[in-house]
Every structure is written in structure tokens, then in C-alpha cells.
Length: 109
Image 1 (cartoon, rainbow, N blue to C red):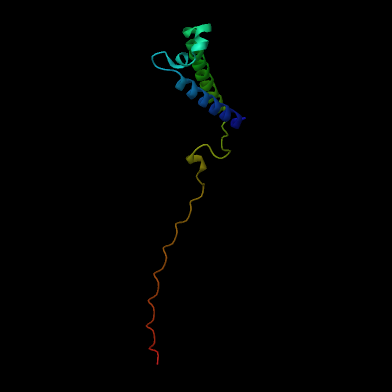
Image 2 (tube, rainbow, N blue to C red):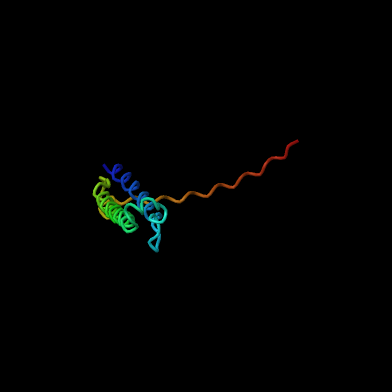
């Protein structure tokens, strides 16, 4: 279920970014590119559709992100570091003994 929600959230995020890129800050955006549709529906209706799509996708992304947090798998181990500590003390490691000096090599005859 977690993977399904993450994939849906990614799809919604990509769609939301495309819708936002279609919009123009001054209100031209999609309305200025489709002049034939503007004659039928008008500029105001085109921007209303884009604005409503932005709000719907933003809301869907928020809902999917919150729902995803409920399906994150939790580890079955201890709750925190204090309860995960062993009850018996671990013996300290002994330092390594220094290496013995090497014997001088015998001259080869």
C-alpha cells in the first residue's frame, strides 16, 4: 500500500508542476495559447479550469502525503537506544601487544 501511495503522490506532483508551468503570473498562460477555445468558452473559463485543477492537485498531494505516513513500516526492534542497550557490560578490548623487533638478517655468502 505504501508503494502505491508514493507512486500516486509522484504522479500528482508531476501533474501539479505541469499545471503550474502552464499558468502565467499575469493570467495569460493557457488562455493565450488556445485562441479558438477562448472564442467558445472565454478567457475567464479557461483560467478557472487551470486554477481549479491546481487546487485539486495540491489538495490531493497533501492528502496523499499524510496518508503515506500512516503506511510507513516501523522497525520491530526496541523503541529507543536506552532500551536497546545490553543488560550485561561488554568487556573492554585488550590493547594489541607491540610487535617483536625483527632479528638482523644474516649476511649471504
